[in-house]
Length: 182
Image 1 (cartoon, helix red, strand yellow):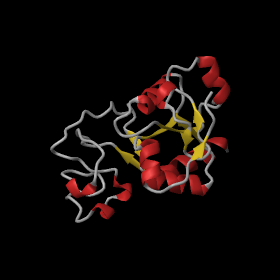
Image 2: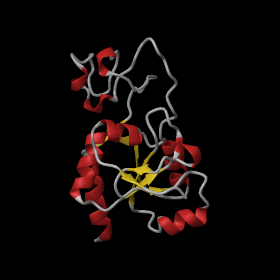
Image 3: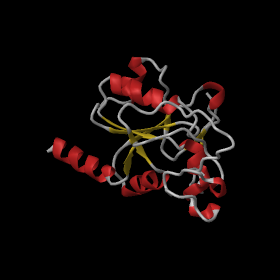
Image 4: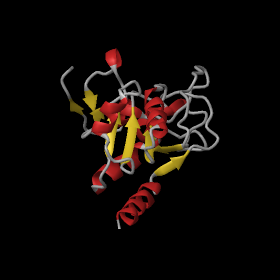
């Protein structure tokens, strides 16, 4: 029965998960300068056509993108918002640490990074079949994919990366929580 429930959750999540296909280099920017955009194959007419303004590439400012998750599975801002609203049980993990962790979180997220001790990870995430979403600052931040890959190497199965990060979440106008510094 438990595996059926997990399968149904994964199927539901799959509606919002985007396989990374043909991902190229680029950066976040104003959609008015889009050259290539995941959400819009051709440049949008105005910046409001690009959800949260986080999908554009500025050809004049090439930037190296962070390494992609080995699973190739990511979730968009709209997909994550819908997933959170659905009430599907999941753990959201903010992978930022040290000076990069400003205390702002997607509601319900906990702080965990790829350098965390295995014992701390197992305490926070005792079930390897749980749905886990990792994120960090933005599309250029490598921390979420590092955590994603570390969790995968520890045997966690249902992992999704939210590469737009806290900046993409806030750019879309979604609520954030603020936690005190450690």
